[in-house]
Length: 476
Image 1: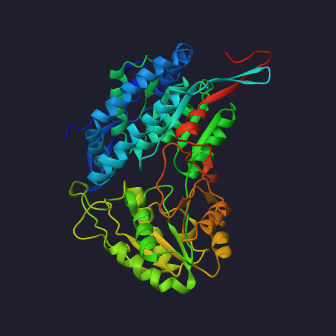
Image 2 (image 1 turned 45 degrees about the vertical axis):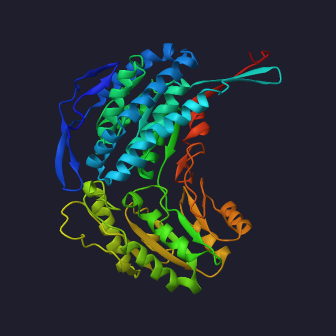
Image 3 (image 1 turned 30 degrees about the vertical axis):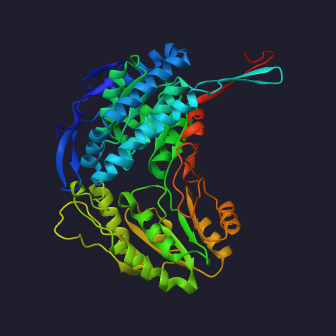
């Protein structure tokens, strides 16, 4: 498969050569070998993209909704037409198994664009409040910074609503997994989006971050990634009082209530934790179970984890490699630390599976985890599950909320009133009841150090809108 070209930037409606000469390598995590070069931009490249977005904003912000809809539909059509190609690029750049890469990973692009189309068809940008006309207007030039774990998903959840709102933008995808973003850029170019509305640059946070998040011509920063980086972005953006939307880390608790059907809840919980090799910010990584049923849970969790296959992405296993060497080293170190702190290893561990040479980690399950252990408090971002016992439902809720994070939560139980009561008590932005899936129409985001603002659907669209009161007027 010919991989997309990540050695050029897209600025002002044209593919251009970077002003910087530095290059890096995109590495296939399944083999740990380089597969393609990538240009690494500098502050001058970032400023060029920002100024192109600023120049395009006035006209694009006044573009009729019908025209924005037409272009967004064309982009959606392009994403669907090239979905397998996008999936192949994602599999190559971050190691997702082929079915996951072509399915949920690549499919998240059309999923979010279609939801924005549905909203934009009927969204009211003006409304009356008393004698006042309240207008929702595009916030302006937006910097969009996305991670490597669900690359197309995070790009689409930012680009689609930003376009719909009438904003112009600069996208900086992860330099470790930029190939799917290059394909999206080709689709945007072919759709005829006006020059400067969408711009693409590649590079590291160290080289581009200060300019992209602190430049006075940038009105908003939308970032998905680590809490550490999110804090730095917030501090940098504060100097010019920008809006900052942050979708950050998580350490989500999964509470199995005493009346839950363990034969259903535990295998599903293990699979949910291990999906995408555990590289999901909302993964249910803390499994909280009644202490009297702990050994039954451990047996079921061990069996479920050992039933999962690990292998080369092209062979379509359940788990591929971790996405990069730095993440692999972190996960291995945290497994070693958990064993050192006294957690009981039920299955998995640090040894690579079989003869695989890349960044592979087996599904790993720990029991006898206490809340003070690093494995219970820090985001691992790998296929590692921590089982924690509790003596009462009140204690389970207290343990779940005893975290600096608050992205997601999970509850299993037969009594729906109790399940909902526990969900209401969790200090998280989302809760899944009895294995319920995500919903692209509902808001995605968290409490506390998991970020601020919301993505997806209506809430995601309104992140990119400012509110203006026109006193003495009435809605048109």
